[in-house]
Length: 223
Image (cartoon, rainbow, N blue to C red; front, side, top):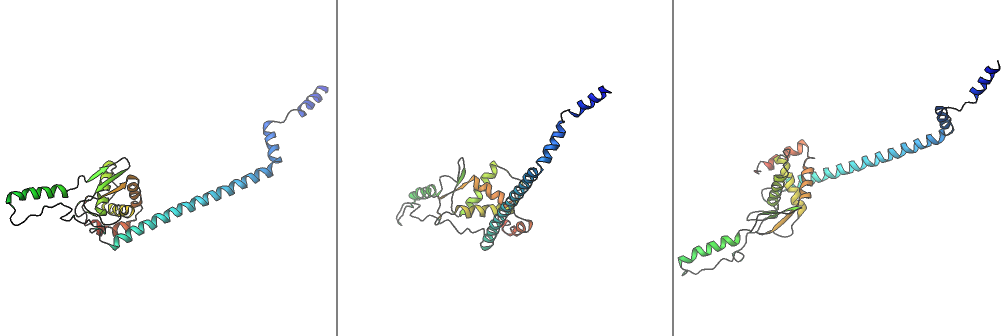
């Protein structure tokens, strides 16, 4: 009998288990735990709301940019750029004036000199961060943007781009380089690779209706 009593006394004095300790701690600190959870939920909701607002803002900006490009294309014919190249004058070509008495033998010399001077030294140059396009006779900024895009796609092919996408891209580039004054043969325009990449990404935000609307422009361009 004494042994049974002693065993019961020993059992009652055993240390509580880890699970029991955890339960007791949770019960004692329940208010603190609930408060922390509430703060966490509020912070998560605020972060989620601000992120969603930022995404909506970016989407609105992209949509506005696309609409501006489409409106610009609708207001002018893409086949005739507003920044049209002014052909060099006879003085700029250093054309040799001849009198009626000039010998026939001199004529080939004059023609050869005019051809050599009127031709640009280079049509395009690639740097680490951009493509530099040189205007030739009849070129405007849109033509140079078209060449810059073509050179970029040679190095970075993208089979998802249609002719309609390219029409949008070249007008996007034209609007964002904004060369000042009238362009003449030999003038150059620099198109950064980052700008071209951004234009390509923007074009992929066009919907089916917008792409269909661009078909009336792409039909006149042979890419």
